[in-house]
Image (cartoon, rainbow, N blue to C red; front, side, top):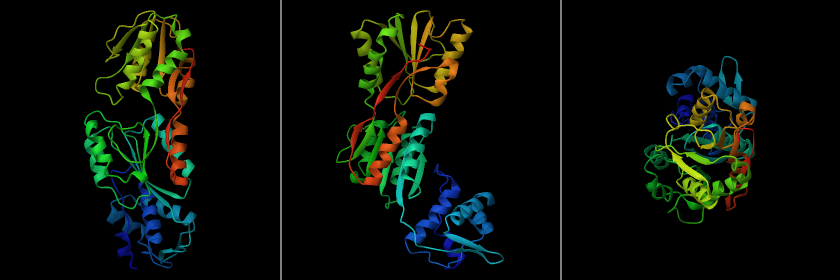
Length: 343
């Protein structure tokens, strides 16, 4: 095959979160698997790839180095790059769609990719909680994926998510972090039970919470967080007679001695801590702070931030096990209360 024809087999998607050098190398591996490239076929030069695909020379070179390290291609000085071997295990192809890449979502991604190992091709997309982008990415998907792994959170338009997700084959579908009402069929899910999780976590924290008189849940108006979090928070406060309030904007909310703030967004946590410090209040004594979603930094920030969180690493690992073992699984992820000095 001529090198010009090979370029037509390579896909580099600007909207994909997968690094371009991996998209390049994965495209070549897929072409080999499909029999479109065979041993001794010549590949385009670095300059050709850079010009035609509109990628940097460094990206093109990195993709080829990745394939050379695997022994898939070789380079001959003065002649170029060639396919060296085609006898390798066929890779699983996965469509991975995240709402955003926050610290805890990266934990899911890293554990998922690590558990799958090198025998998986992951097309990774991020739709930034935007339903229109979510819809377009699914409608424009390829049809040869072994699994579709999706985290479904939206700021607006989420009421139509089930209709779009239902276009996917259910035996290949895995929902992570959240189930979507209206998605039918026999699909897999590793998810949080948002109402039950926060209720149980606060119940576990009840004894230490009794030194405060009011609990405030910071729940942004234009956020993607499920309303079930509010339901579980309210149920706990009513059952155990805590004064409580749902706060939409932490920037303007008064901070008083004897209050506990439960934040969902990392940006709100930064604002909250800054305001507590500037008010000469002592966190964990005058004001309590509980942060949603465990991240490594929270173990050390200001001697430790109390968290309530699912196990994101396990969530990614379990999703990978579903893919590897070709099995169906419907499981609530474990949820933990971790007490630290901020409370």
